[in-house]
Image (cartoon, rainbow, N blue to C red; front, side, top):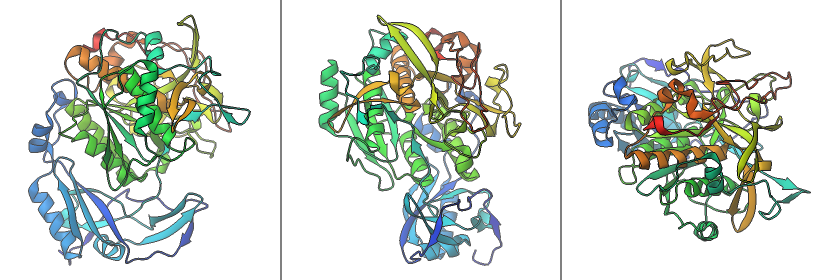
Length: 515
């Protein structure tokens, strides 16, 4: 195998960004790398829209083959790499070895870099694989360990200080919001498991107990699951703990009684992907919905990352698992400063329920006004058109425009929306501190809690709801006022009747058709 010609793994690297300085790297450092393998065969279309596969059936019929795994292991072992784990359902093999041995195995150079966020590794070119493995290996993750995503939450502050619940009359608890939005009543999330993906931060059990007791709700069973060395690591209220606690407290308040499994992994494309596949194929906790509040503009991802994430989300659809993801918190620019429009990934995957943001005004528990969330260029609902994923069939009649800069006819984002403006945000408890937090990262667990209730109500998983949602736009209450134009050129998208690239179809409120 060593004498075989190499084939480039197309789209396996991104060049260093401006401001990233090269540094020395110890090539004897031992790291772990995830190699993704092909499926035995393609997923049948009917499994994506109701005839769901069990996790056991999926592994047997559609996971990776042992033969493929054996070939990749043999190649890796020739290069002094050792096997940490083989998981055929996740289509993943994790190898351990020196950076220098990985460089030889994949005919690639790995350099050290640093920026304001710290030190990391980055490739200088595409990864290469032996010709006889080119159809087997679908991705190699972990050689580059650049931080990939940011949490989509925003803390409301006044006069430089954190706002308490008592001084935030326009803020809500998630169970209050569920009542205002007309979520199902008389039912709990008992028997459902909501998975939450976290790339940092942590939770304290005392906070969960105190918060839910304060709501008069039995605290949920919350389990921390370590992926790739990520751990539940709470620190201070101004850290990523805010994201973790927001996700748990919103999902748990909307679907009381649901078990919550939090998958902690490092903030890299490897960690992110491994957390998702671990949650999907968790045969013990068996989550029926996954909430993701971390992401980044599509331009920051490699092609192999977006392809492998997307294939995992397709697997979720086949397993009947709904994926909810935040659409971003800085409007049409999605945090980028090049003057162009961008959409956030993983929300832009056609298999993900992309969750946008609104500003909500309420009088006497009745909605008086709900508009697109847009306070500033750094505080607005993410949305737009993908530059990578083509327009999916379910959006053919949604009047999705072409992407403004690339003119690509791509997947429109978001699909639905909910309260995200931090000024009308969510009352949470983080490391003992009362806080009010907004952002589309609150909408993802809000929708995840709703899906858990629907699953319980129907006695079966909702799964990939997009075809039903787009065939029945009346399921949502339309948000037709506002825009998310936040680029330096004032480009972006405007809300209007029907689907738009600010809030999708609006707030999911009529649920009977999802039965």
